[in-house]
Length: 147
Image 1: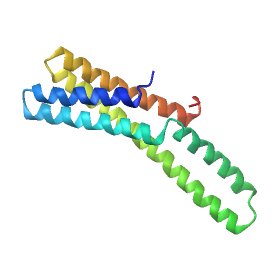
Image 2 (image 1 turned 90 degrees about the vertical axis):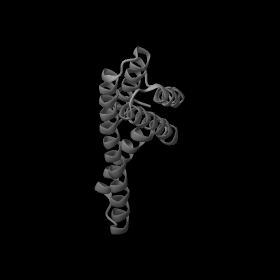
Image 3 (image 1 turned 60 degrees about the horizontal axis):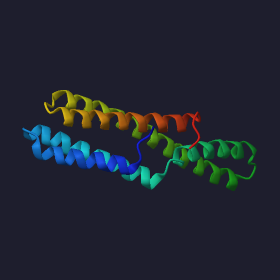
Image 4 (image 1 turned 60 degrees about the vertical axis):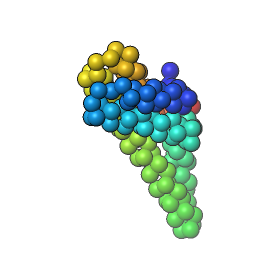
């Protein structure tokens, strides 16, 4: 199941707490970066809502239909501008997916280097959360999942 924003914020807090017990500066920086990334994802989920990607995909289809039928140049120009905006939003989502997958990989790599089992588990849990978010948004973009 996709983690909710509150769960991501709690996990972010756990990462910030782990910074205090980390042995070296590099590990502290990684944990802090992951805490920030989780908080940013939580904020984005709260801001965009889960319908965002689905709505953009539906809008693109609608705008393309309108564009095929538009004879008036003003209508055509307006629809083309809206279509470009929606396509840009979709490409932003695809970049988000890539970043979430990269963050998941970074969290797993950090977990492998960390010696405290509870912190390793938290890092892996965060990685799983990033993967779930990426999978969910991919499904929304593909139209295989309704929000």
